Amino acid sequence: MSSDADDPADQAAEQLPLDFKHPASSARDDLVVSSPLDAAIGLIDRWPAWPSPVVILAGPTGSGKTHLANIWKERTGARPIDARAGGEPPEHPVDTGPLLIEDIDRQGFDETRLFHLINTVAQNATHLLITTRAWPAAWPVTLPDLRSRLKAATVVEIGEPDDLLLAQVIEKLFADRQIAVDPKIVSYLVQRMERSLDVAQEIVDRVDALALARRARISRALVAEVLGQWDDGASGT
Image (cartoon, rainbow, N blue to C red; front, side):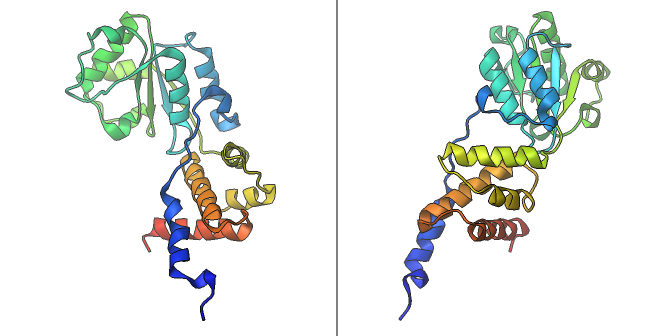
C-alpha cells in the first residue's frame, strides 16, 4: 500500500504553486545598498543634480537596473518611451519632462529618433535615463551626431551582485513573506545560485511555494531540491 507521500495527487499539488510570484517592492526604502550599486544609487538620489542630461545605467541581467529605474520613475514622474521607429514624436508635450528608456539594447532603437529625443531632453533642461546590458560603445550606431551625444552621456556601470548583496536580497525577499530563514541556508543558496537578482526573486518564489505546498519548513534539503529543478530547467533536461 503506497504512502501519502507517494500519492500522485499529492505530488501534483506540490508542483502547482511553483508558477506564482510574490510581488516585489520597488520603493527606495526597499533597495538593498551594496557596493555593486553604490554609484548608481548615489546618482539616482542626487537627481536632478545630474552631471549630464542623459544617464545610462549599464549592467548584466539581474543586476538591479529595473529596480533603480522604477525608483527614479516614481520620484520624477518620468514617462517610459519607446526609442524604436514609429513611436510618438519627440515634440509631444509630455516629452518636456523626464523620460525613461529601458533595455534599449534588447528592445532596439531608431538612431534618428533617439538623437531627437536626446536633443529634446537637453532643450527642455530635463533628463533621460536609459538602461542597457551593453555599453553605448557596443551599440550599432552609425549616425555621427548620435554617437557624439552618447559620448557626452554619463554612463554608470552596475556590477554583478556580490555575495553580501545576494544574501541581503534573499533575506529581504523571505522577510517580505514574513519568513525567517536560517542564515546558513541563505549562505548555501548564495554559493550555488546564478549571480542575478532576478534569479534570486524566482528561486525564493519557488522555495516559498514548495514549502507551502508541502506544509514544510524551509530546509537545506528543500532549497537543494529547488536548485536542482532550476538547474534541470536551465539545461533543458
